Amino acid sequence: MNQSEKQLRQHRLENFGQGRDELNFAEFPLAAICDRFLDGTKTVVFEDTVWDEEKRKHLPRKLTISGSDRYGLPTSKDDDVLLACIQLSSLGDFHSREVHFSRYELLKLLRWPDETRYYRRVATSLRRWKGLTVYSDRAFYDKARKSWVNRDFGVFDNLFVYEREEEEKIASPADSWFVWNEVVYESFQAGYLKKLDWDLYCRLKDPVAKRLYRFLDKRFYRSDRLTLDLHELAYDKVRVSRNYNTAQTKRALMKGIRELEALWDLRPMEADERFRKISRGKWEAVFQKKRKTARRQVAAKPQLSGASLELTKRGVGERVAASLVANYPGERVQSMLELFDWHNERGEARGAGFLVAGIKSESEYKKPKGFRSSKQQRAAEKQSKDADVKQLRQREQKDARERAVEAALDRKFRVFWSGLCESEKARFQDDALARADRTKRDGYLRAEKVGGVIFDQYCQLILRDHFQRNGQGENATISCGSRSSFQNGA
Image 1 (cartoon, rainbow, N blue to C red):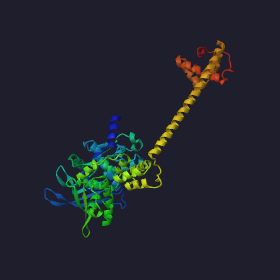
Image 2 (tube, helix red, strand yellow):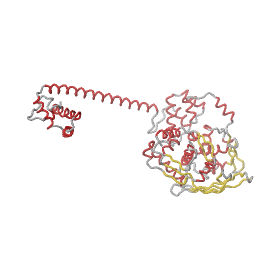
Image 3 (cartoon, one colour):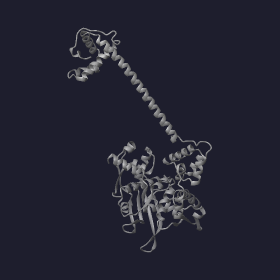
Image 4 (cartoon, rainbow, N blue to C red):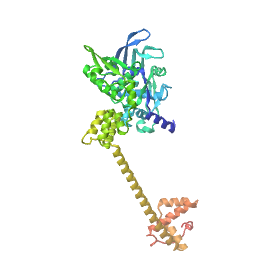
């Protein structure tokens, strides 16, 4: 890959918007919604029923996932990495099972910080997926065969991670690679995919929101309104802990739901409308997309701009955003936007409430170590630039002084030299060579054999050094003897 192709690939990764999601992966949560396992679980089983169009009845299905002893089961950040791998294949139109990449490219695609610990986190995720085995009992849909199949497979067949990427970073070539398992790749080739708003997915912070977005977006394909069994949704589609009671389960889902209501086309509902009790221990969850007319009305509203628009992109309501921009200093609003992004880019999730509270705070929000606002960065850049300009001027002044001293010494030497007779010049030359610096004398002796400009320059250096060494000619020593090769030295 030449430099221009590399730059084009990097630009496409940084501006990637329209993604793809494999529909089986969108249906079943292969990764947990937390970022670590505390109980050492290595196997998880999901069970539900599916409508079989051919047999015209619901059939039970079961999906079992088992992780390796070394790396265990995937977590929420691993889910992000796997989805990013699908996007890498999407960039190449899924033309090959073998995908070459660098971890720097994955970080840019995921919008994660370019830091060593994230390079290692990506490597761990890839190995975790390499060690995962999926056991499907009518749970994996084979589009090419148009049926639910019993298949056991992995995600990656082979994986190679180029170790030096942590050091080379942006300069690292795409020397890492993975090979999709044949079952997974066949699903790609068969087109069992759906569109995915990658920009929206990366903006979502809560793992529940990400999981629900993928699942609901798939299910909304047939209907704008869904009614689902609450516990089946929570346990088998989102991976909420099965130890939660109903109240805890609803709370766990609501944070992600609220984020989707703010950033996606999910219609807002009150909790008692969203979750409905059917009978003792039986609850259902209701989801509905915003009406198309409502979406058109929103699009017809005057476009927000500047800081107001940036606030709404981060989950703040339009009215609240406009009020904050109108009533608080623009510098504070901008600083909190930057602090919000700084935290989230490091995986430290912050919601819209963090932004609003920080802007409304009577005292300046305490900034964490390592954070610098754009104003501070501009000040630091100006200070650095001023220091560079000052250093350049000092260097120019020093060079000018040295040139002046050199010119004055040259004039003095010429006056001294013109006052010598030929025999005095010869004696001065011999004495200068005898006392010359060893490096210059050796250079002179080598150049003497060929003569020319270099030889003349060595002559000048040795004569001038001797002149200056003797108090600029005032007490120059005249020795006996002569050296003919110095006759034209001055």
